[in-house]
Length: 341
Image 1 (cartoon, rainbow, N blue to C red):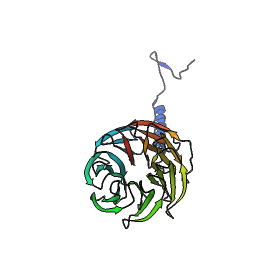
Image 2 (cartoon, rainbow, N blue to C red):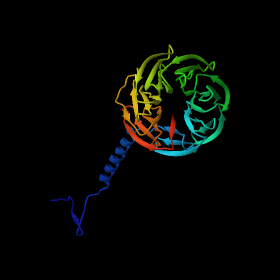
Image 3 (cartoon, rainbow, N blue to C red):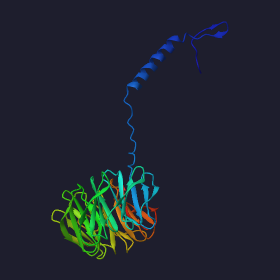
Image 4 (cartoon, rainbow, N blue to C red):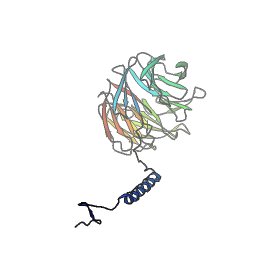
């Protein structure tokens, strides 16, 4: 039952004046608004925006470079280059990519932001691999037994460095003071001092050394010996081998993740071996599609990229667990691969 306080006037219900009641309500409302305005704004815990990681794949069978953007999860461009591109290297800044064209005896220089070729540089015979410091690109000329040094400021060759027979792949130390070159025909690795632009050591390894990579701490070099089915681990302080590990058949590409795992592409067994910095296997070999050849690791320790030469594809692996994430179609006969951010 509801009761009203008041009296009837003229047959209508008379209520007491509401003005005092509304004044109190207004005062309370203003006080509440003031409290809300003075309260600190809530903190939004948004997920971090994914880093931009671009992958450049040299397609030796289609004379092109495939560009894959991991943030978008898709191929964003196919760039025409010279004949039979095989090797790929990027500047530390990630702004420029160099691609060796084996049958053209040239290097294509790609703007990694505009995704276009900006110039073409003549080098030695049958250039195969390329590695880049902030100031120079080092191109292994398989048919000339030399390394062409390109000034990255001008993209002009400045000198040729003699190395061993059939130089295959170069790798740059993290601080850029040394370049390690595998000599496929000599069972050796040539160490180049970048300050003097001259060889300073020759290291014996296994048969037909191909891929090479340096650990993030600059203490180890890993060499894939295609003819021995092994990986040689080199101590950078002594320039001497410290151990040799059996992997799959015909290992070729090698990369080391920021998390210190070594990924080796075994071309003849269609697997990837994963080693620690001492060369010991950490997981069983990971099956991938036909003829894996190239290996590259993302700079944020997220993914590893393996080119499958016989399947015209690239396998993306989780860098921590080594489990496959996705297989990406690329061009024909992919070989070299490099990652920028």
